[in-house]
Length: 259
Image (cartoon, rainbow, N blue to C red; front, side, top):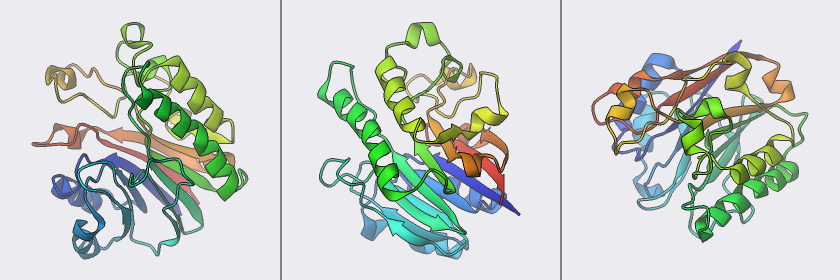
């Protein structure tokens, strides 16, 4: 049976609700992880997801951050406590068990200049995830880690690696922190199936021609433990929603598993 997991930084779920619901109707994933929902829990459009046939769990805050997981299947084992990774009031991690697969959805801090406190916070947040995974799961379980990591791991994940190297999102200290978590037992599922560059999930709003020229970043990811990665059949980035009117600056990344 195919089990489809997707991830999308919505950049405001209420602004992008139509995009998300259209995509759910078209693709019918088993799991959709959402980041930057930017809405308090009491205002999350849960009824609209239920109307589309999707259960949804969420952890939000006003105007910033926010994470959610939607699925047509029962959602169990819900976790919203990230163990102190985030600052008080921030909503950056939500996890659940769906059909025997542990789903962890994160919105990693973006950071600012490498000399800033926010960059140090980002590095500590990423490294702290390894403790979260070690405490919460075993690496021989089927665990999928998805979300906006705010890091492009490899030179082929950015459109101009020489110029961008050392910038936030493509910095060697971020790469080391992410590697530290990866060594707990994760595989980058997209790179199992696509070895070439030119595949991006984010194009900056501020320079519209970047999308037309495909000058983007692959900062949205679906990683899996060995047991689950072994069952992966394909992975792709769906660029079409980014071409729509009033899109998010990100688009959907998707992976299918034969579970």
